[in-house]
Image (tube, rainbow over the protein chains, first blue to last red):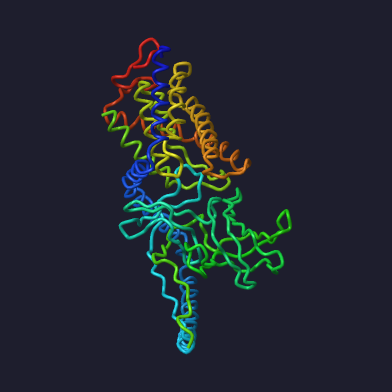
Length: 279
Length: 183
């Protein structure tokens, strides 16, 4: 390349980068949304294909063990039916007591099932892209859960997709509570370690509360993003912070976020049970 | 036809890069398919087209993540211009040369993006995880660049953009170079 041409290309690159980096937020969001929307059908199709291939391979590997699996599932079904019968009686009793005390029943949360179609393309964030978006009424700031527990919250939406910031991302903050001791804290993601373990850290726990490994961690409902009582994980280790003013706990999430395939978006805003009126 | 090929291959690379799983022991580094594609164009096309392709690949990568739009475009563009500058000094069509280009480019862009995100306060990674990610990116870049180059060259052939030759090098139709100058 001649030196003039070299300078011309470097100047063109600098100009393009400056232009892109200084785009107004609305234009930048629209450009991002356009690319995500364009690729969403391909992401969805390929993700489903990959899942089908994995399931087929797993089925082929497990054909020999299907009878044993069937037996195990039948036992589990019988156990769960018994449990549902017990819980139905308790539910009725609970409803009667609530009525007597004048408590309004906590509204059931509306859950929108969604499929994970992609992850962050650069690998710097713990995010997942779902195949539901603004078309289904999603917006940033909604809680996302799995059947095991809290997964994260929606941060960006396009018409057909939404991005979820997982609780293991270092930018994630969740107000959490330990029901056993009624301790509160702020749950911060610490990323995924090279050995594959994904952990979080619960900061600012009162130093005199007896927190111990095995304690359950749930959402506190403070802050307005996450409904109260969603299971998050379990305490694995408790430490005192450097100044000794608070305790800090290491928390293992209940949900396996590294293998997340399906999730549910909590569509309604959190509704805490509040006393309607004293009888 | 060149632009059509660029759009098709960028779409494919962007789709796959966000889907192909990564491993925690690789520091969660992604297979740099978009960067490999940008390098393919840097090594086979005129610099103007290569620069455009690199910027497009960077924009797609940024749009599919949370990085500021333009960060990857700047890094990919710089890598493309540098690779284009040195492509005549090595046998750039050979897989080992492409692997070296890919490893250096992936390590440099990962390091650059880490710096940009750190300055912007957008990503928090410890020095250990960041270093592991840079090393893994180099490894994945070395593996992905020759493969992407191979498939992109085949796509070029299928679209009539390249002429098969006796040697391993594929010369691009309409962008043959004279005396080391591109274009």
